[in-house]
Image: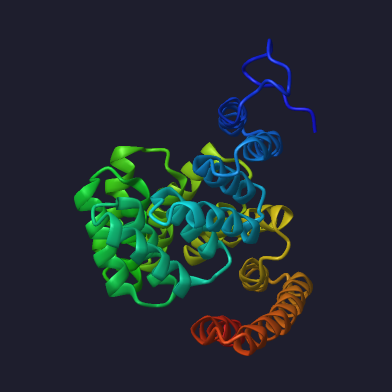
Length: 321
């Protein structure tokens, strides 16, 4: 791949590692992650000990969905500078993307041993603990992050998630609303608030939230599904069917949407459509169960017992739907 830099008067052989690194940063900011990766590789060819380039290279790889490679790039940085907090935080993020949550917790602990006031590490650790079902600990981590950085949007959303899992719905909704006071168009906070409202049967309020999301992102499949679910809860099955069909046009693999569609069609007396929707849900569930069991056994064989238990729990959740 041909990469242009910020210094067009220099030939490729004249460019320094810093030139290539700066060019990569520009590409990364523009979302040109393949070009960024090439530039960082060129920087590291010129100076293999340039720690920021290893970290930035890992970030570009993560943006491309190459999380194992991102971890390897961060490890290269840490081999040069074991106290590189940026590398540890980036590695923790990648570990989370690979569902290696215990390792993510340990990585965050390394950051916090170096910098106890690192809000990113507190938040990242909270996310990992939540994924392990340790919601009280997640809540404490999010509160630590927010004490350091009170306008940390992601921490407010993660705190809300933990509160919801602990059955503290009013506090959960208040936490989402706190995030939305900082940035009213934050989709993750809007979506979480809508789900929380629907969970406590405040379907009219939830419906207005999902409408807001769709106004901001017209192809938000999950918002159309949740909107259909709220409409179904209000007995507005004709409208529910329309919303669910839109959700499934965007994401045909959403088994839950097929189940709700089956129910709404049944309530409208459209029995053939109801049966077809149920068959679609059953097919997806059966496939997901098979894939989940294979993944769980693989984790078990590799000695990742906690991750295997989490994976098996997901399978059981499908079976009990």
